[in-house]
Length: 468
Image (tube, rainbow, N blue to C red; front, side, top):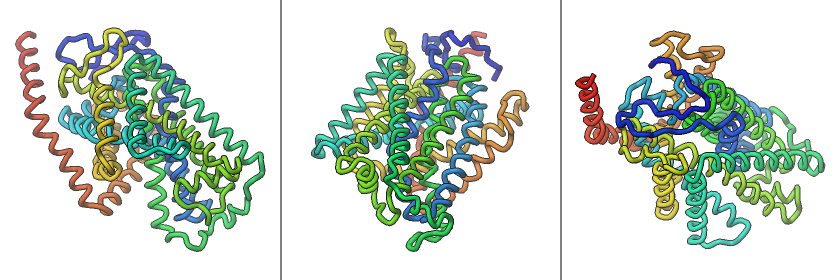
């Protein structure tokens, strides 16, 4: 693929479109908004969930710190690799584009097939229901009302992203800023008020009685931390709307991942300072106990409201980034062409966003335990992510080192791929049945690709050869 010369203010057509339609996106996002997308999506309810499990299983502040630093280093390695890929291929779709250019359209279609039908709407629905549950901790809600809140949140934020990228980006940026301010307030208030006890960090290295065996606890902690930090790669999906993407995207990824890792680490240590490890139980008890230490009896409500803001930001970012994959697929002829249509007034991929929102609403209302459903597709999703980072090696070997610049190569992709490969092996070994079913569903995309899209692409390519 030839190097692209891009005017930062120009409209950009997604490469690969054979229709000649005016499927264009405008580059209007800067570094602040692009970084905010990462912060808004990644810092969600996980920051209030993960620490409790780590403290209970690891039983050592040192090992909690080690897990976050190791996972953060792996994420930085992945972000540096994705930054190089994004600079090399700054088009809408992100991971989908990297798979297509490296391994061919069939592999990219399988990723898009899984994303559109299962993981994207499933994650969106899961976050929306989590938002409703957090609101339910403040205002009592029936099951039906919680489902209604989840659907309303999805539809409202989908509408914001359809109405305009500028409006959607402002909402994401505002929610990310509020989130950081609130977390900063918690840290300063928690440490400044002196309501905790530094003795909770003693012993610092030795595991407390009742902790899990260290090796198993480390594995579980790394898995939990990996998924808590997950989602930073989604910012690459809006690359077609980023100004000066070759500079902006790598910087945003490093900055965003760094902010998120630091936030998780500091908040985790602050909670440990406030709450004795032996009193930490599940997520609700954890939030209410930390809140009670900080704010008295109203503490649980205060922290629940902070969780609501955190989760709302994640939902807004998901509905901004994920639909760009379906848009890119349709522009490439790997999905129905109409999905690549840009709204004539708002300039957004409205149909792609509507697809994600509609499927997420169905899951939020009609599927009981979609977290269990998503469990079937964890390994395939991590596999696609690993293949995208491995594309750094493939493309540099195929086209030369100058074609794809990654700082300190080959350390960044190795930093990411080694723990990610280990994670896949552990997850697959822990539940081979779920892994097999998930991979089977992905492979069902092959006949769908051949029947509906491969023939059309071959026919279009043959017609182009005749015309040329």
